[in-house]
Length: 380
Image (tube, rainbow, N blue to C red; front, side, top):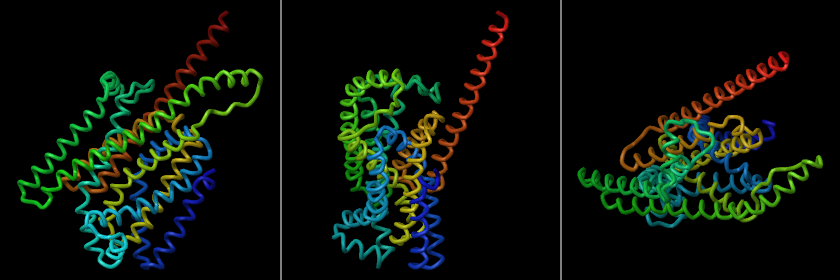
């Protein structure tokens, strides 16, 4: 099972490391390995959230996620995206941006760094909306009940998450502009860019998430109709498979996953410059890490891990909220990548530990209940 799920990741790792050695020697291999580990640690929460969405999709779209989706993730976000950032921010052609990335790495890194505020605003707002919509939804299973119960009540207010996100964006852009003006920085004129980028992230979330939700809702009538047929099949002893998203609903879910992956990759791409400014090594390292994140997503779906450890999805969404906050803070201040990765790992680890404790408690209660029934039966 492990080899089947992670086989492509192992193969890409081997090819990537060999390519690194051929390109830059053993030092390059070490850099690629470090970048791969960093990408996995930063994106583990991405895999958990992806798994929650992917399990709703049928086998065909799961394969698309692992094939076409990984090409978009590796080549699109980890290779093309940094070049596009430079091309847009420096107002140059893509070919010239590629030449700059290969021949003048220091200037290339500086241009990407200058574009960071707008990147962080877009990704931060997209991830913030995911977090807000999650915590404002009333769920049967609650992890931090003391916090989630009152938030679920607040969530009944229409468009509350959008209003909060807009307030956060306004505060971030105004603070950024004020700080730049006080320090006589060169970014004072970029406050408007931050605001526009943040709005773009918010609108992207609303469009992609709204369309996927719309087509998913349209399937509910069909699911209700087929539910009766499933119950009938069960009574007749026939095998029944769960209904999976397909068609337009699955397509927009796929788009949502890709935008989600893009938002998660922002911190990885920017953080990679702390390790190397070589675009080739960056693409190799982040690409290998992205492959493992994809494989881990599929593994969580096939093993039913999210059903067994019910708080994992909660922990991942809290990690998303932390990452969104960090991205918005990095518009103005620098935060070490170790802190970014550690917060996500700690939150997911804590949610896993809480899930294990919950499972043990339920098993103990079930065992105690069985013993009581046995005693009553023997007494009778």
